[in-house]
Length: 269
Image (cartoon, rainbow, N blue to C red; front, side, top):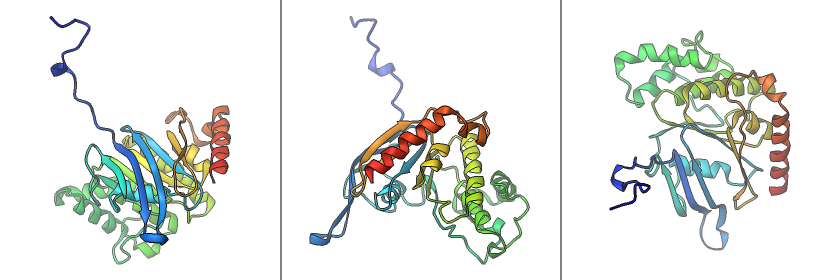
């Protein structure tokens, strides 16, 4: 008779796949003598609801790793799984790039409506969903404007709304605020942090900025110089809700984490 302390394997709850599972991934560009190993080996497991920030110097493989997670490229070796399956481009993840990549001949609302259509949202639901998404990113009053009629910061907000249009559980962001002025960048960081808390989506964010990493992330991974490997992997433990931006930045632990991560980035560069 089995011991009562040992659970029957048939009654155990099935293991929930990680939102992102990267195992011993390496990626090489080119072949022969000119081949360049950009990344790896790297292993990461990202649970559902985490906001992971990848930070490091230029050329350390941050964007390469993000493209592998998005399914835009396949690893040279190792494996990437999203919810337990291989990533497929355009499915399972909303992606925001450094440049908005919007359709200039469409209105702001038209860009978001198109994203909803590609996400499979029924036609009759789209007129309601478009203003909801624009409200979420602070663009409720520009739905009828053309893309060229709004600022760069507003264009990036449209890109965020478009990425949120589907029910994809994963949001991937590749230095989306890098080209913006400091004030606009700070405002969008605050908006993204709020959207992350409201939606609970798992996010992977690429940046060069230590300040941005600490402000946005629930977890930060520092990559070494090429080929990128994990130099530091740290759960921040900072409050995700209940504090304003200035209050968050005033916490002693915020300053301590910023110093620790900044030191790791400099040492790994």
